[in-house]
Image (cartoon, rainbow, N blue to C red):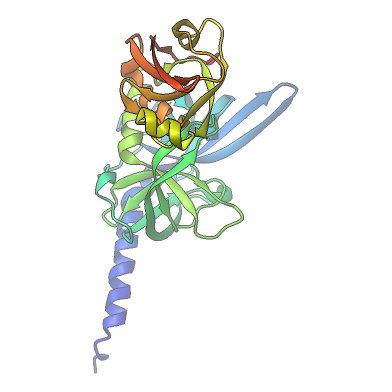
Length: 319
């Protein structure tokens, strides 16, 4: 005699099938990334996860996984080990691309991270604490979060999920129920439960493309150290400004900001007419297309606005 239909059991079976399907499609492309580092007189290593981005051996992982590495190895799900070369990394988005010759890794299908919805099922695959191909599942808890990278730069449009992550998951894929990659797992909050974050795939694709093409991501640089500060209400009203701006705490000698005449104490309130409520707004606007292009900096000085002209340079390590 057949057991009676149980709607709850059917729903759980459908959930299980979705997780199994995603894990089976994504798992073969996931690798364990081991980095050997040397810092001053100390040597050590770290490990994380990654996944095959293209059939010809490009692997995507987190920048912090391979930071300062003098040698990198990847291990596939079946235990094979390969030497990997760092093609490029971008600490500002915590992404890096590796190249693995001869591994024959199956690449993954990339999903549309812009189509994600809060509550949607997601599956994370990685190597927490060295336990290879560990699968966890959860939901998209929130979208559009902001998270600081190791450089202090704000990473925007971050995916928050409760799919459990642990040390070693970094750089692994976050997939939807169809097994398409929608994010790159990047961080969790150790003292919390269910607070995990992933870089959306549309950001990762753009960064990976630049790293594969150029080995780096170009960003514009003005040369000021700033702090978000509130504006006095009468001053903001009189000048038609937002409620806050960026106070210049330091101006690097010889920088575009110095050349424009920006002074310490000036409050930057707009860039090419776009209001700046804080330092993160400025960072978001200083992209590759601004390099070498004259910009109008609207500053508040002595209670009145002035417009300065600056030509951003390309950001380098010294910046």
